[in-house]
Length: 85
Image (cartoon, rainbow, N blue to C red; front, side, top):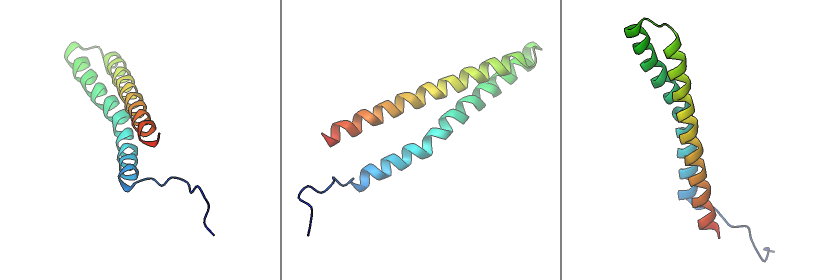
């Protein structure tokens, strides 16, 4: 006995895209903070202002990574909504 309206199945491509996105997002946050912190460290070392610029530029890098992550999640939601309807 099968149901009249079975739930829609996700294609294997959709699952692999979701896994790729889930693996990529932590690197966006950590990468932004690390690159920003490293650039801030170099500026601090050059300008003798330790650790002010490292913290400021690192926080800016984290914010940029967070912004990029949110943009990618919104794009992924739009793509998934367009394919299901």
